[in-house]
Figure 1 (cartoon, rainbow, N blue to C red):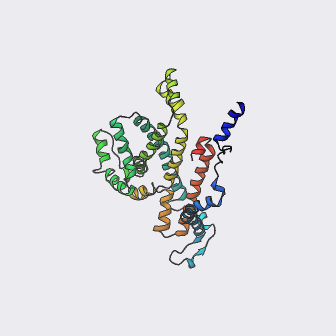
Figure 2 (cartoon, helix red, strand yellow):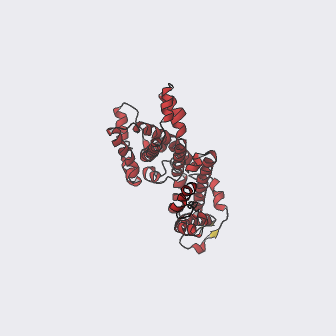
Figure 3 (cartoon, one colour):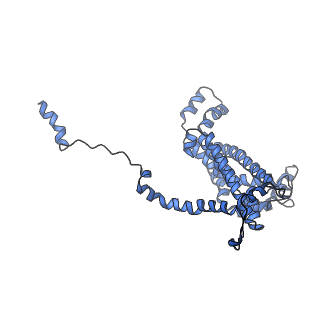
Length: 318
């Protein structure tokens, strides 16, 4: 009787032991892995790596764009010119870039997080507001910049009309060196906050509710719940928003070109706008390439700093 019962499993499986599932192969170390990734690597090399290396090469020359064979080698001469007393200066343009990026990172992150917490509550009106909030980011920047030039018009613009209706002091906006950069920041926040708000909404949607419910049962206020639980769990999303906002802000160009053209009195001449002005307007391609290399180095520096300060899930997310 015992022999019969012990033989049944062997008969049911045809006398063979069940096979163990083979571990998944890591194709990153195989020839097929290289073959699958080769198209993306080639595209990245053709449009990113090679142009970056060529830009550094051009920055070492007094470049003749019409006849490169007549270019004169200058070595680090173009980089030494960065600190010469010219208008606009490199240091002032770098400061304008950092000022704009800092305002976008701090203001954009705080505003988009507040809007995400508000829109998370749901409802027909708030759900419709999500589309309206994201719509500016989906519109072309060059077209919306042209509209905001009229909004900031000091004579008949909508911005001054609203201030006047509220009995508040009006501003010259883009016509004044003190208010031009804040005006560009206002437009940039209007255009970009929709995207970062959607990112925060995605982060809030996947947060577990157990900790928040436990905090409310323990008598925590809404602010304590946000500061000690929600904000802590949103840290990876916040790091991503800060990183992507800082990088895009350092490279911002269209709004400065269309709204203020770098003025007045170079008040909105950022590093990216100075690259355009030197390389394409003044045809000083070598010096413009040197500025582009410095802009690239500044972007890489802030990216590395963020990655070094990030920990655990923050690094894994990016």
